[in-house]
Structures are given as C-alpha cells and as structure tokens.
Length: 236
Image 1 (tube, rainbow, N blue to C red):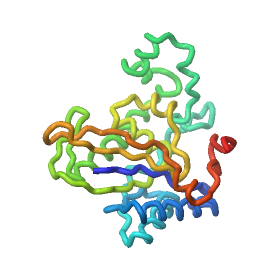
Image 2: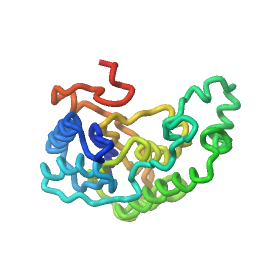
Image 3: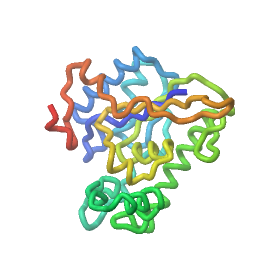
C-alpha cells in the first residue's frame, strides 16, 4: 500500500480556504493524480484541506472521506513566541553535545524541555498517533511494536490531505522518530506530497518506508512558482 500525505494548497487562514495560488496548486495536484491514479481520498475536517482534496476527487470521480483526527494541531501555540510548538527553532538543540542530543531526542528528555514541557502536548501527539493507527487498521494494517501486521493485503494508493504540523507528527509516528526531530528537520510545503510505502519485507509484516518527501514536481510541471507561502518563498 502507498499512502500519500498531502498538505493543503496555499491557505487563506482567515476563511479556512485556499488563496488563488492555492487553488492553482490544488489543480496541479489533480493533474498529477489523474495520471498517477488513486483508490481512495481522505481529508482532515478543516476547510483548506477539504477544498484541496476536492479538486483531485472531482478529477478522479472519487468521494472525500473526512478524518477529524488529521486536523491541524492549533492548540500547541507557544504563548511566549506566538508560534506553534511544532514550529520551534531547531537551533534549540544545536549547542548540545552529541550525548545530550541523544538523551533529548531518543531518551525522551525533550519532553521536559521548553517549549515542549506543557501538559497538553502528550494528548495531542496521542491524538495523531492513535488516529493514524486506527486509520491504518481500517486499511488492513495493524500496528504492533512500531511495525504493521498485514491483516488484509492490498496494493491501494491512498491520499490523505492534511496540514504541516499534523502531517509531520504522523510522519514521526509512522517512522518511529521523535516528534521534535521531525518538526525541526522537515517542512511540508503547501500542496507537497510525501509518499509512504507499507512494504512487506517479512511475511505478513509491513515496514514503513518514506520514498518521497515534500515533493513539488507537480508545481514545476504546471509552471507554477514554488514558494507562495512559508520560509521557502525566496528559494527561487
């Protein structure tokens, strides 16, 4: 099975919709998947994700199924900086020794560090993790010790339209990586496509492999600018 984690197009946050460039990005996605093909389409409950998914669904004649757990994690705003906790400055860990970084990321010490030491954070991460596992169980893949037991083998191509924070958090869960390491190291550009392959490397057991990260080739093919929003705006 292939799972495409897709961030919504350039957002109009005030109206929870897409801007004009965002609609063009969504149309480029629809062209991409008209050629690639999809079996099922899912979306977070927020309008900008549903609107982006709608372009591809219309092109393929598919329904969009809503997954409320995949909504953006707005509740994690840091009152000191006004930023989302998952949008922290990765320089936080830069001055640490290698052993201290290992303890922070892989020993779990990050949970007691600012800005992550807040009582609501574990529940938000669990919401994404549990939602992702329930979603995969419905696809026929049951999580066991970080791998997925294949209950119903399939070769489906499934798209899930979501957001930067929620998408990165589910990526961390699927790849068994500490969330702050993923939050600080990766970025999902608007309309980007991240591809996960649930590969049967042992009989009946699927290993998750990331075979494409924040891909924007559909924008290049459509002749659209890359960088209509976010810190990538000045790359081209």
